[in-house]
Length: 401
Ligand code: NIG
Ligand code: FE
Image (cartoon, rainbow, N blue to C red; front, side):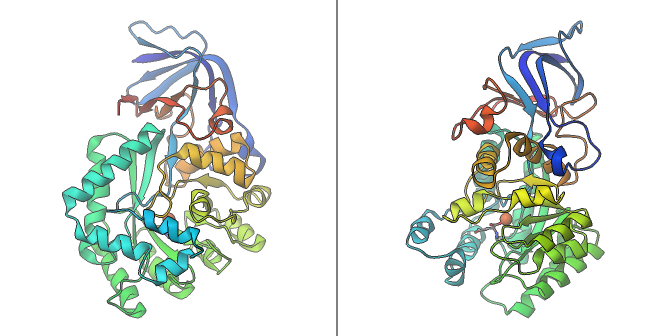
């Protein structure tokens, strides 16, 4: 049992049983000069001058406490890197040009297939620790750099292996439908993904598909996601990243938990997603890394009551583990307020991966907390490009690097 004593403010969304949308997304509770009492993995009390005999005292005078960040969309398990593609992008090549020429995802597939499991573990563990040191306390991790049974299973095992550290909590997603492997035609690979579904069932809770021009069509995505749904997977979809190609609408139709990217979604698609109960997971690091100005229309989503979550999309194209950077991009490039960015990175991001016990600082909630060296929570976005997180508390335990 311990007390975080003397925070200059504790800032959190209000406790809620459903994701926040519309105006409610922009409201946070700010309590000045407040303590937090933690016992086991739970928050027991949040108030001024807490007295609890026997509790250890951790002095956090002058610091700001916020809920731990939840990163609900990453491709954390890969081998190698693609720094040369940044130069190609600077020369004017598009993401789809690079992919069509065997680069992009297919390049990472080659590298991920070629390393053994131990090497893949060590490359992934480094990123996992980096994410935590920047404030991520729960993280979603997808497969999708195998595009064959053996390597998809290897990636999923590595993602599950991270759970054994008892650090950030992990949610695993099977994304065999991330690209087409070079040795099979489209029809054969869609069948192969469907064949893999029962084989990965014990290793993944969600199934995701990259529904886009140059990737999986609406019909192919529907076939895979329906097969996954009937096996009990929860669904996600990468949709409308470059334009409204119907992926967002398919997601609404299938009842996905989240539709991700949505940079090109039309107003009608946004309204359909909102009616379906989906959450829009926005990934502003992706257009940033693609040297593009094409960010998701966050204000339109908020005006139409689509709940938003933010995520890094951490992958070899968009290489960041920092949810702080993502919140900064959300504010600077998508017009979200600092409060909306915080809500979208905590409580709404938790709902985006089916977690209902975290993302809020209040009695009875899971003790995932960040102690930040800022004078006011708005500095988390205003003061950009550095790491403000000083202490990371995950399930009541202090993470020490
Ligand atoms: O979410 N869009 C598809 N997949 C990833 C990119 C993966 C990669 O380029 O390696 C994304 O942006
Ligand atoms: Fe992605």
